Image (cartoon, rainbow, N blue to C red; front, side, top):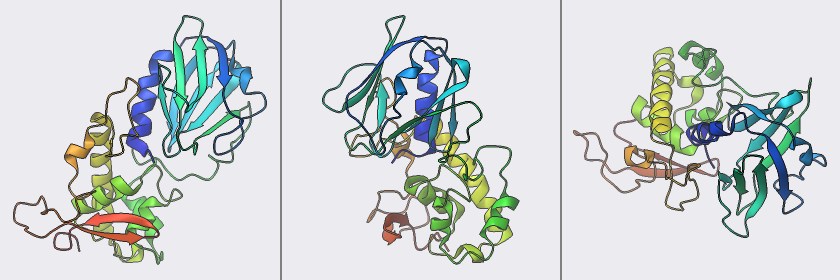
Length: 269
């Protein structure tokens, strides 16, 4: 599933649509993860004013206070050309630009937010990891008394948004903290280090255009791949030698809450 860096990369790729007027929308199936809103075609005739990201959601702000909400699910992506049978939404603009939403597994979400509404998918989200409202102190406070692993805590979108398997593994490796350590046993010093490494890892990943894995599902708007996998220290490196110069241990993999976690048992405590 695309995580914060991938969604932010998509957002930046869509920004050149700002100011363009939507001519038409073609919906080729009744639903994705949920049914499309009945008035989805009400986006036509409106210009795109701005595009924001909240957690893993894209918020496309249109004229007359209408917001088009998009979640890419596991395999959703936007592009400017038709690809084939999995092109579920096609948006044409007055100037001839075409935007295509493709989603083989159909776990994406599209909905509309009207003036004065707080969408249920956005109403209970935690702080943005790159925003000013989050800090190491806040992370420490939110972890106290939690009897789950720190890896599971970082995936909790009520604690902090946008972090998934890839970046949680990378953040914890760079922090020197075992993914098996209980959240309640994270010291204040550890929490501040996790905060610092979260900022560092996510910024680098965004600059690299996100992460395209072996399945090739995630692509940038222009079709380019995300190159952060070249920076992977542990993710998807099971059985390979740890990247730390003085460590010859092999990267291990374990399953936590049904999700794969990669780590070095020597470097992470």
